[in-house]
Length: 235
Image (tube, rainbow, N blue to C red):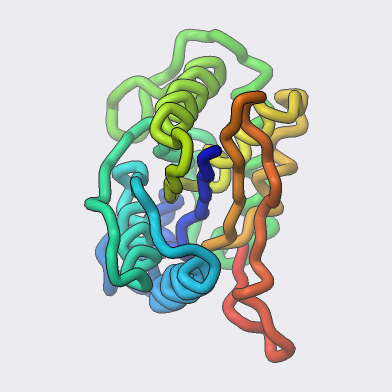
């Protein structure tokens, strides 16, 4: 039996979401973790270090917020594998789906989420359309292409989570919940509602056995909360 821990990245600055904000916390570079995000990654690492001895494999996408969170989690372990990059775990293109979002809209949260929800609904409904150019001029993914990318990344992770192996994957809310939605047979139109619930640096645990992959916990974040509010955030 193998185990996979899926950790959502910690809180990232506004540039990670396609928003140019002069007041953003850029200590870890554009699209990198904020000070709160650094803390969240370290807390989740400490929490996991209290549960398990270590990981046999550690992977993230190549987005700054993902790779920085991976390093933060692994920092809690004395012995750790070399961090690997698998771009299959990257998030979908947020700027392409949100369009222009002002710093005020992003800080408000609700308006930004509403605009993202509209973009996701249109993206899903479009199906296998010819993707329009992304914000960097390159082609954006269609929704079926995103689904296939996540499916393939998950297949690679399952292959590495053989008997006695413990795999750490750091990714994003949309990508993590897309895999869970595929495992649970969640309709495409309902998948975004799952992604909205994901807490930064939350932990989802899966077991890989002879009967396939089973989700044994989803979006665990109690270690990030306390009576004073803790450091649990959604974005």
